[in-house]
Image (cartoon, rainbow, N blue to C red; front, top):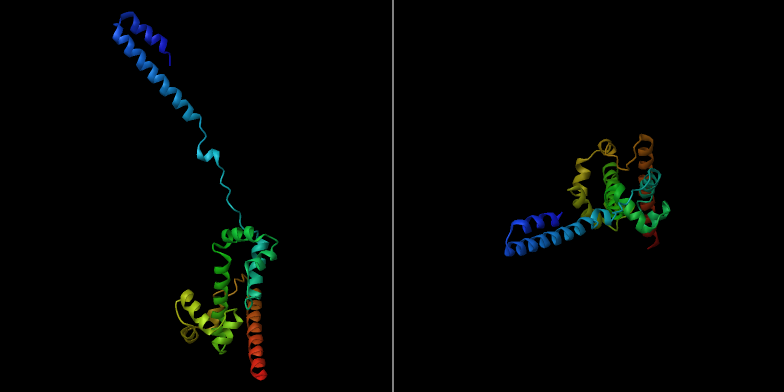
Amino acid sequence: MNTSLSLNTVLDGGSVPKIWQAEIDFQTIEGWLDRQSLVDRRPTAATATTVKVPSGLSEWQRKKIVRYVDENIDTKLRVSDLSEQVRLSVSRFSKGFNVTFGRPPYDYVLSRRIEAAKYLIASSSEPLSQIAHACGLSDQAHLSKVFKRLVGTTPLKWRKNASVSKTKQWDYLTAGTRAESDHGAEVLHRLLGQTARTSLAHCHGR
């Protein structure tokens, strides 16, 4: 802003008090403009900080985790066990898992246990205690509690109302193809058979 030109105009035809007031006004405006230019040059939060969005798992990693969880559904599955399968650190795996599956590993594994239980309850007459162990749950009470929370009904009511053919359509092992679905059913029944044999061995050992 050319303050000298404006000030000369005032000097040519103005009184002394007006001249002083004009000079004060010009100095105030110049100071404000200087401060404003510094603010404008200050980097914004968007430019100063770059937010790094975590990436998800690759497709082969996703498939391997799905298959590993389903084939080991009767065991204690820790996050470290899953991360080792795809050669990632626990921290990196957990972040990528959340992006890909939309929930933490623990929630996903628990949902898979209940999906397996849904199929076994509908497709067999085995005791709920054996089905609970075959799905990696501690006992029948644990199965009933989690089942009611996630499914909205009890295992016994589910057994009464569900049919095997309908259960197969629910993709209980996130298979994607019929061949893999059949493989998933074989895995579940194998686990159920192992649980039954273990229970029988304990009975004979007493």
